[in-house]
Image 1: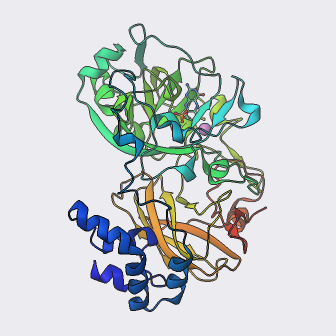
Image 2: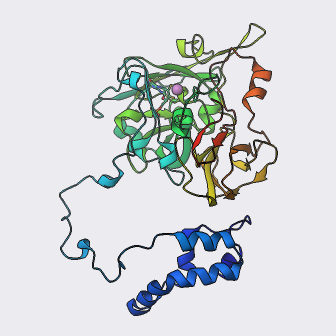
Image 3: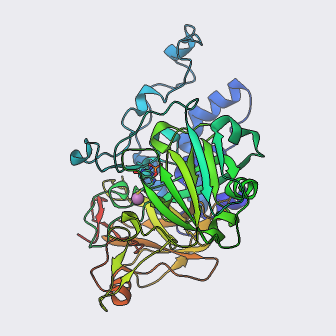
Length: 448
Ligand SMILES: Nc1nc2c(c(=O)[nH]1)N[C@H]1C(S)=C(S)[C@@H](COP(=O)(O)O)O[C@H]1N2
Ligand SMILES: [Mo]
């Protein structure tokens, strides 16, 4: 408590203003809490001057005090019983949170090729609630009865097999936390989105439960010529992707649950492939078939799509890994910093190659960079939270973050990406995203 109190506002250790009440010693009898409340205005001023921060004093002095002491006026919620249980057998968020929904662009309310984005700036922690997980469908969301669904494993195997979902649930079960990201997040051009969600909302992170693909492939017995596994979805798109056998045996999962409950239809109910760190497109949903082969299928999704034309005239193909990336989600585009003073810059970072090693933040348009604090847990191929203590002086500023993963790879700027790949690319844009803060505290996309 004491060191927290000593480090006020400008230092990297500084503490947000809403924490200060706790520092005064919140626990105690109702009486002492009441007294403390009545004195707290003065106590905060004393604390502020002890710490020698004029800004803090001014801020506290002008802050409007609530008209009634909430500990004296009994709130309505205490005067009658609340809603009984059982009226809502499946829980939903508070009605006051109705604005926190997936971000669906106007032209997406069709079935042939649609996306919805996670509302990144509204979320805390590293787990995306299932109802806010991003979606990408090439032919809408099929309705599949799990009792009738089957997975066929065939091709270069000693024993072709057919599994029901219940069969797969009998195998040893594993749960792992990983992000999933579409490789068109955002597509490779000057990104014109307004909010963090508009720009990189095609990333989410969940706890996935299923059986390792290795377990199932071992059951079928992959022959020595088996180099690839062709995965096919049971949707109208018949989504088909070729997966290198090494990945199938390393950490690929056949997933039936997400965040503790069965997969949502949008995420591939009742069964999906999940390839940690690989471009989202390869994690085939509504999985019905795995064929072991000696060569890739060269499906539409790995020839016409999900390839990038280079200046040489050749195309990058089979660009499996999602490279390290990060974005500041608070303050971020569409938000406003209420007043000068303490601001905790917060965001997310991730890498398909493993753990995030560091995140650096710049608050001066990229001139200087400092390490942000990483929040535990830091997991491999999962979203990682970072935080950076900042004092906003009320001047225009450009803030941005860059991720460095455990391989040493540094998230590039968009200019560096164009230098390396030209400007014909479409997928795998992992550029640094700068936000502009104007003198009123309004935050907007600095690339526009
Ligand atoms: N069968 C099938 N699998 C699919 C898709 C699809 O349209 N059909 N979309 C792919 C794409 S492009 C992505 S980014 C991810 C999205 O997964 P999500 O909707 O669970 O976020 O699923 C992939 N798997
Ligand atoms: Mo995707």
